[in-house]
View (tube, rainbow, N blue to C red):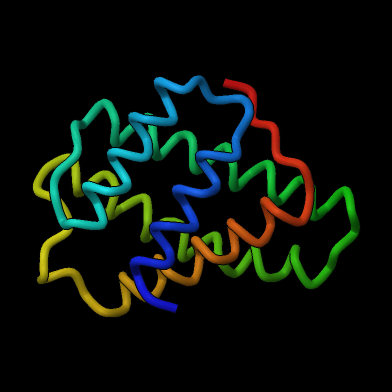
Length: 130
């Protein structure tokens, strides 16, 4: 999986979220596109997007627990650490964007956790209260 695919997965997740207004969807999608291009995003948007991802991730974990899906629970637990890398990149992007100096491990972790979040979100209905 490549980085572009991961960002596209996240954009797809945002587009499908019925709890977000069109304005918020547009803001988050623009932020994701900026991250994909290594551009900085506004600190307020960074924080908001980070909180949104945390909410989605927590809901995916709850859905996996409710469903008793042990494999998915284990994958999400392992990915929780990787998710922190994405949050670091988002928060860091509010300062100076993702640069070419970002490590391959950070990008790999981002790819992995975005795929797991996307898979979990598609395996059970996700409705995040905002």
